[in-house]
Each structure stands twice: as C-alpha cells, then as structure tokens.
Image (tube, rainbow, N blue to C red):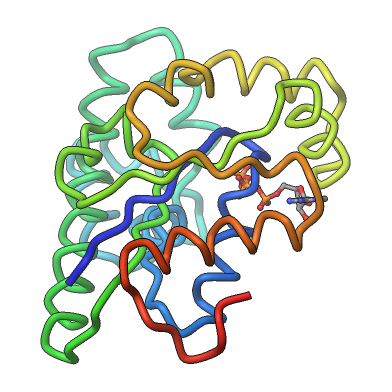
Length: 204
Ligand code: ATP
C-alpha cells in the first residue's frame, strides 16, 4: 500500500487536492478532522487534557474552552508542546487505525492529508510527500476570501508556519495550484499514473 503524505500551507489547496483524490476512490485520512474530534466533549483525549490543565479548561457545557487553553499556552512553549503532544498522540493513534483498516481492505494507496506533515516529522513515515504550492500573494488572497479574514490575520498565521519554500525541500512532488482547478487535477492524476495507482474514475 502506497502512503502519500499530502501537505502545504494555509490556503494553498490541500483540501482541494485531497477532495479530488477522494473522488477518484483513494481513501484519505484528514489530520485536521482527527485533531478536532480528539478534543470533542466526552473523548478520552479531552479527559487527558483535563488531567493536565485541571477542570478550569472546560466550559460549563463540558466542551474544551479553546480561548482559555490558547491563553495558557501562548507564552509558554513547554506547556504548548505538552498540550500538542496529547492531541498528536490521539491523531497518531487514529492514523494507525486508518492505515490498518485500509491495509485489511487491500487499498493500493492512501493519502494522509496533514498540514504539519513536515513540522511533526510524519514525512519520514510516508512513501512520498506531495506539496501543494502557490505563490505567497495568491495564498494570502485565497485564504482571505475563504475565511473572510483581514490580511494581517492571514499573514500572521502564514508567518507562524514553515514557509512553502522551505517545505519544498522535503517534497517528492510539488503540485502547482496557481492555475485552474483542472490544471491542478491533471498534475495530481499524472503523479498517480507515475506511481501506477489505478483509480475508480478515469484519471483526468
Ligand atoms: P487550509 O490548510 O488553510 O485549510 P487548504 O490548503 O486546504 O487550506 P483549500 O481550502 O483547498 O486550501 O483552498 C483554499 C481556497 O482556495 C479555497 O477557497 C479553494 O476553493 C480555493 N482554491 C483552491 N485551489 C484553487 C484553484 N486552483 N483556483 C481557484 N481557487 C482555488
């Protein structure tokens, strides 16, 4: 089973590419969805977070008080790392379950859609790294339009991450998403062909 690690920057087009790959019948693991589920009310991971911070980290509803946590970890890198590790351990366990299920089903290829694939070191645990890339100005514009966010908010988020230029050094494949969606799909389909991955629909 070929494991493709799909990554990029904020608004560079990961979800766009992963939806396309999914539409071709390739199973996709969404690390963002997994980390959101990890902190849901009643989850085992949320219980670990409560053990770590104390019950003050919960709202009256029993949900995680995200602003409270963000405030606590903002100026304390050690605390941030400890908190991230609790969530990442859960995402890693979800990923393992996903891989085992897909192996058992005989999947020929799977995609791990992981925004922080490189930063977290997961790039060493996949067969190939695909980076979805666009020029910085386009990344800012698309993220602003999608999130209805002001430019300063978007650039601050982008600057807090490893740059796309730096991520390129880890990539086996760079998908240029600065053109039409059709052009992006063609590149992804071509890379699948190179890997000998057959798809449910005709690659186009
Ligand atoms: P994030 O990590 O911030 O969630 P992402 O990398 O998953 O972002 P997408 O959500 O796929 O990025 O794309 C960002 C925005 O750009 C979306 O609104 C999407 O519809 C749009 N977009 C993506 N690719 C193209 C394209 N080739 N042409 C025009 N718009 C595009």
